[in-house]
Image (tube, rainbow, N blue to C red; front, side, top):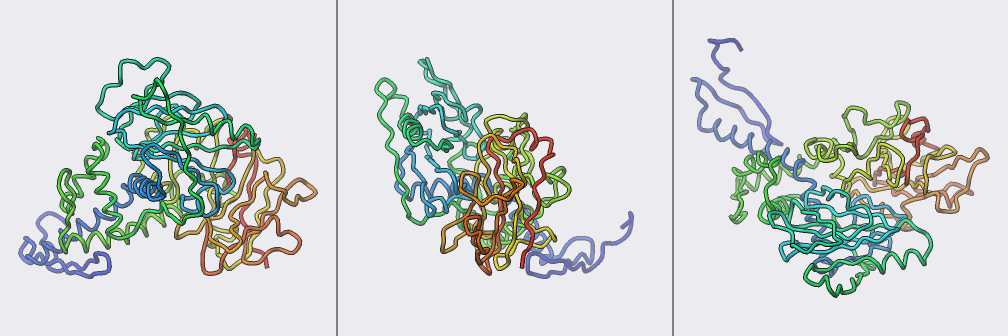
Length: 461
């Protein structure tokens, strides 16, 4: 429209599932059009805020889930069974998890991370506290507080948020080494440093629980929880301002009115749909492992500049919609003590992976790993381990798999087992679509230069 032209009197538009007509008959909008435009603004903000808030909302859902199992502040819980690990977004079904959450507003904590474990400490936006994936004695301090004067023998780490998560994974197979590592893990208040108490580990057992963020208004309740209890980060100031007209304000109760509730409810619905599309069809630069397959780099974090990842709205939303925590050792750029993640959502024909169809993944010989590799299948809706009667979600090189003459391994995914190859089979469920992660523990050079191919899942009769 050029200068001097009159705005059209009626412009049709859609907000969510509702159709509206904008009326600019005399230049200014009518009263009805004003309300329509403000509703459109706030609905669009809710959709984008859903994507932005995923790391923090997921953290709170995770923390509440673990707390619901009976874990106290700073207590470690062990997730050893299939049922327990099914509560975690895209958990590895091969290795045990040991997780705990802590609120630093109660005072500084000391975390003793022994040798022989893989772990790390993250804040409420799921950013790693630098260096905490390594063995050491860490003094964890709340934001805006001075560390104690006596820090001898302690590596001081100040969190940007009050709440943190401590995670440990054991990759050793020797039971003696595993028991020794577990016994050496300690989390205790700084005030008890002279006589550190033991750290009892809570067994999560087989109790059903979930760290998957809820839907609808429950999602926004988690977002408000973050607003109320955590310091605002500079990079998030604009988003918090965008949410103010929808009832979010620090220090005030979250009590949205009927209009705000309707917009937030639909914003969560459409926002999650956007998140699912953004994850399953990643439209980012250099996201493909190789041009001859559909495998994506699941986590596009630059290990040499990890903090920049939290400025990438779509890339971080693609990861945190289906996964938890992110650090340099989860997106390595060179060989070392790390792990790499590739994700697949389509088969070799480009069709979505279907729980009612059968597929074969041929893992080529000589996988570039220092420890082991695994293939894990997840439910698209829950983003957790696939729920099948067999409680089998993965196959890995640590298992006794059938191997082809050339050293390759065929992994089968489908509702029925392949004849003579059941030990290489991951059962899927008709009517429940799925996606897969291929993990490489201690990836080697052939992964980084992408010379080792990983074919797609091939449909089989």
